[in-house]
Length: 314
Image (cartoon, rainbow, N blue to C red; front, side):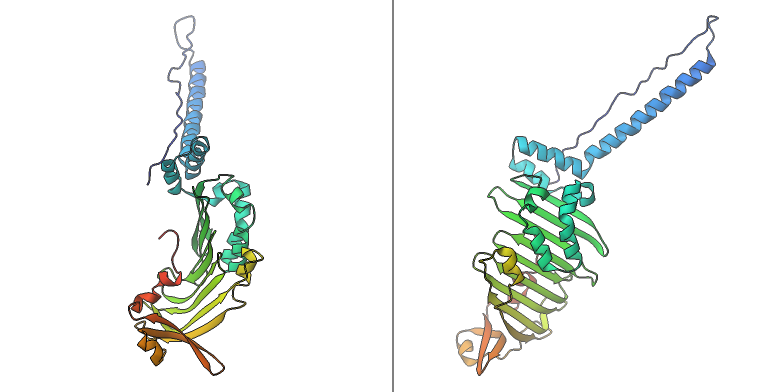
């Protein structure tokens, strides 16, 4: 929704000039000139001031602040939808907000998922970034060395939280991090969903960890070497610690895909009888373990979105 509350301030510019006359009935031209110049200067200053005030009132930041103030007084879902459509340049917001976001932005620029997640999981992240709003959404953008980054911070009516940020890296790929109450995930991949990629997720309910590494073809499907990491992380020390050590107990399965996106791993007979197709395996001593999918899953099993390569704005 693009409804925007726009506040404009206009003031009346004096239109009448006082003309001083001499006793003989002729104009005192010197006084008139000074009076006209003074009044014209005042009118110009007021016009410029009004223009600046109107422009400031119409800015995304001013619109957001006005709507948020109304939300504090009387919350409405419709107004919240209006707020969801507003994006603010981070450099225009309060110093406290900019400072809080700086650690995250530096981590994103360096491709450091652990530090990025740590910064979002700090106790006061939502308090600062949402300015104490219990329910709210703020969208930010800003300039990076290789383009523009974007970020959404959200606390909804159900008390659920989400922070999502996408940052352009020097190699042309997008670095995306998303932290919600039940899950942490990130990926590094080209915007076109092609080329080399990494995608990892950690379920904060049961500790399930899954990671994917490989290359996506022009058809947005894996080709060549493909690796899957799977394990269960220890959640006892909190989400941040669990994410830092997410792969400590993980095992890795390797596979290969054709240029058409079909797995080349040989499927053992017992899996074939069950209607399944192996796509990766690992060997432990004399035993070989497989990851398999059903034939019905087919090529769609490895669409980018199925591997966590998708963002909150899609």
